[in-house]
Amino acid sequence: MRVLASDDLRRILMRIDGRGYKAYHDLRGTYELGPYLLDVAHVQGDPYAPPSRVHVHVSLRAVGLEDAAQGGVSARIRAMEDFLGRCLSHQIRGQGAGDISIDWFGQEVLLRTAVRVRGDELEARLFVHLPAAGRRILGRQATHILLDQLPEILSQSLEGRCVDLRALSRHQDVVEDHAALAGSLEKNGWVAFVANDALLPRRAGHDDRPMREDGSSPVIRFRAPRSLEREVTLPHAGKVRGMAIPRGVTLLVGGGFHGKSTLLEAISRGIYAHIPDDGRERVASDPLTVKVRAEDGRAVTCTDISPFIGELPYGRSTRDFGTQNASGSTSQAANIVEALEAGARVLLLDEDTSATNFMIRDEPMRRLLKPGQEPITPFLDRVRNLYTDRGVSTVLVVGGSGEYFRVADRVIQMDRYLPEDVTALAKEISPEGPTADEVFPPPPPQRRFRLSAYRRQIGPKGPRVKAHGTKRILVQKEEVDLSGCEQLVSSSQTRTLGEILQRLLEEYGQGPWAHLASGFTTADLQRTLEGLREEVLDGLSRFPRGDLAEVRAVEVIAMINRLRGLAIGRS
Image 1: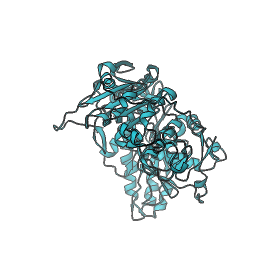
Image 2 (image 1 turned 90 degrees about the vertical axis):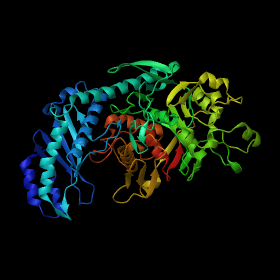
Image 3 (image 1 turned 180 degrees about the vertical axis):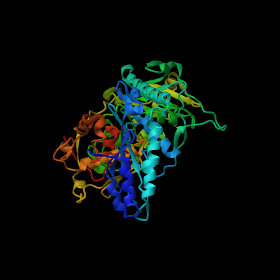
């Protein structure tokens, strides 16, 4: 690799000043900027195209950060990458460098491609919008961006003399503690842990930062009920006490606006580590926790929803149920069955986002409807067997019916944002009624996904897959709605899903995805993703990207299940 000097970059920019925009392609190459190597990896084709991609490489020793990466512990390296990415983002905003950008960072700490630490090398992947007047190059402005602003941003963000090393260490400690907390769940038989003093409420639906006290209502920190309070010892925080939710069926009850859904949402986000001072740093959930809901209008393809929906009118079977316009009950049944197929160990449900007729049928309605008139077996009659026969736990928000009391292992009441164990009282007042003793059906033969309908649409430029925001992917001309996948928290994750779908649509003769081209099961896909491990992100696209983030196999399978042109076979 030939490395040019910064003066070479300056001369090129002066030479192409005022020329047509495509002359910016002369910048392709690697340049030395002090301790940094600037790799201009891709130059945008015109001023209105996505920005150019530049990668910055530097040794940790050169910037005085080698001690922060000592030991190579996965959680600490991930936290270091996340912290430095946030430092870069902060400096870019602070300098008003509108033509330079980096991936967006939220409250969660995700494995990302924006900043990578491998051995002794740090790589930062940035985006630069190369300036123009119309379609004429503004070389002097580009010189200021690349040779003045960018080096200043790098030095202020990545060099040990400028980095808050104490804050970096704390960031790493918090992420490593979360990893230890998550690891303690299985050995203790818990599905989730919420530490005392956690701050769970958020500022607004569009603002995921912790709520601030404004005088209109107090901000209440979490405090575990004594009967469910347990203690864990974390590597850095030491002994931490909080509420441990054991395996089984757990109800979250209480009046409206008392914090039931807020607690459930915190548990759903507990699959991720969070940044210091987020309030949920010490909330951890089983990594195979899946939040499910009703999803009217989604496509369902050859899914066995018979555990919840029996034979439909006129003898229509539900063992290979398919529709392009699922109802609330059929969509929720499909979402649960698909989550089980993907390996979910914990289900989270909120009655506010569930289909009423799927969740419960009261005694007067049971008496009114004759046998054969109601195909739905309500979740109430299945949730107990789901745990006893399949080992899948459920945490369920219920505010309008006590029918679930008789099938619950524990009932937690949220009262003015604080939890109270009311299991004994709930059992005492539990309404009489039948408890289903039917065995939850064993899993059917695995479905084999085929994407041949999409491959037939591929033109000479290859598959057309594009992510839009956090909840939408466009594949060929079809929009895939991911709003039902509530545990996706970043548009970078959606881009990763799009890249995975792109790979599945392309037919490679070689490589880790080749064996999936003719069809694949959930197990096949999981093995492929697991085999790639952390390198899955860099192995997805044809070129290194700086805007991807980790996703679980659960979300990949959920995306595939929502494809309207999906074909299914049985293994």
